[in-house]
Image (cartoon, rainbow, N blue to C red; front, side):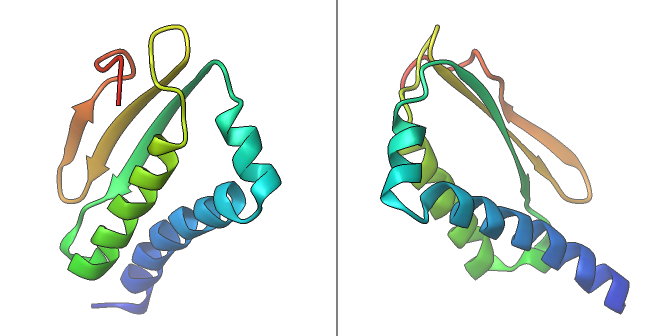
Length: 100
């Protein structure tokens, strides 16, 4: 492992952490998220082995918290998800699910 490689892994983790602080740090911010009526949100998740099992679970828990707080549906908030590691995986598209 190199320091540069480790920094790239931490950049992805810190980005997700920053999003969690930005979206979930105060009641007013959470209220704003719940009042969003129309949005397209695509999550890009690092699923490489360097992220580790524990950190990957933290990311999944964060995503669950965010999605649970949103009004998911056609004409409302649509969510997509892709994973990246040694290969990219498109898990689901924005219009694939109309409910949580």
